[in-house]
Image (cartoon, rainbow, N blue to C red; front, top):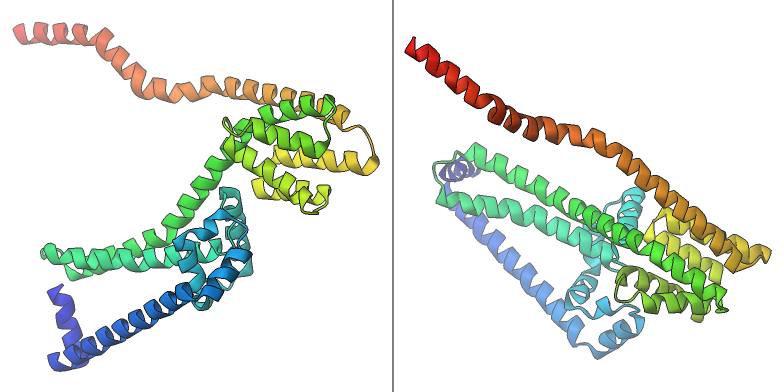
Length: 319
């Protein structure tokens, strides 16, 4: 760290100039912090702003203070959001699949990403004061490495969250499909059947129950059933649900029986699951080769051949 200070002194000419620049930077930082805190406090204290936000909010998450904080940072969105529309659409799709549907979800994600890219290198630089034996060049390298971690870690966490939620939806889909077939065949309409399935799955599969409840809510507020079902496929991102939605849309478009179509799709889906299970079972033998070779066989050889090797070594030592 002292080497870095010496380099800065050499660059700016003398220590007094460096001290003056540091004072001005600290003053600017405090000024920006005060102005930002004041603007956030005023936005929270404004009753009109709070009322508009509460009326515009359609999700409970918007009442979270962190979401309100992100919403108050709207002018900074132009600086933290990427300019590439393709990247923004890809991140928005992952946020939807992960269950983050707030209007400020994209801003919050890139805000967290930006803060991690700044905080982690600063933490490395501050922590280097307690390890003076580390060279300045290595400290700078570690800081760049920490910045890279801060840039990649939010994407990794978001990807894993989306995959975990997709897996939870996939696990609950067979039960939902069977219940939907039973409800439709018992005489319920499609909207009532979806709501009944959502109520039944609220405990065992809450993620899928929430998605189905959202479909029913969209239908109640006037969204066409076809569009509500397509929104379900878009939010989940699952091929199985997309296939079911395509089947239901075609059934409603051509006027065929929903119960018969669901029964056929349920049988095909069950056959598909059986084939997938058989495929996974067929791969099991190949996957077991690696742990057997790396862990089981060495232990077996040690137990089986080890005593003989020890006896041979004893015989040679006696000779």
